[in-house]
Image (cartoon, rainbow, N blue to C red; front, side):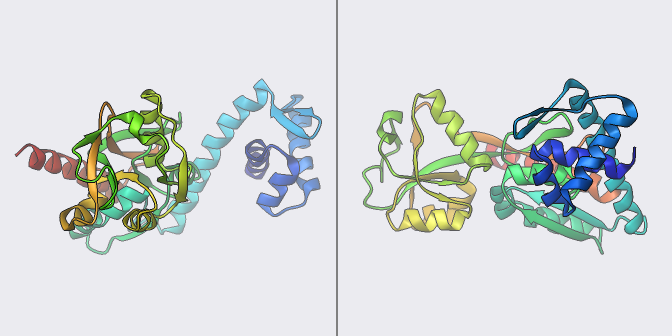
Length: 300
């Protein structure tokens, strides 16, 4: 069994069919089928239950998938290490949209002051996408606001963040310090896309109060959300960090929702099998220091 066989098997498990795996790997379906059949024949095991037009992992297949994911991660790590010439002067950072918009740039600026010549490669996307890239060893570390629960990933809270519900001038909520949860019913909501940590946090918080969240607009860009609310198309909930200029200028108003807990953390996320190197270790420390400094400033 080769590393390529494991890659093909993992792709079939991920996509749920030979055809989809072949398309993702850009190879023929017959070569995908052959690779899976070769593993099953060599070891006398069954990796998938074939049910009509779908494939389901057997218990043996589930165990092999866990081994395959670890092995493929380490192979990609070794490849990246050797291709970098062993210098590790590059740091690949992923950030979810709020973290990437509000705190990542000054954090990287501080890091580069410590490590002149460091090249930071950054991906800003939703939490779901950042997690996927970390699992595939395409990123070294992530700073995300969404909940992450994956056995292969280590998660550590780095800094606090607070969400706020906001509306434009002329809205019935404008000027009110707080509203009752039931008043949100029927309100047009402008929210982030599925996979966003901000949206997941909001939906979970509203569910706990028995409030259904039915977005009228879905945007993967926070500036688009702000613009839509400014123009009166609805209300939204974002990090207060994103709202400071609009709140100070009176273009928007933020109010509390009674009983709604809108505090959360930005968390550092990396693969448990990730080998530490200087830039990665320092990035983590800068993030933690930044969080402590913000916390002390908030208490002052």
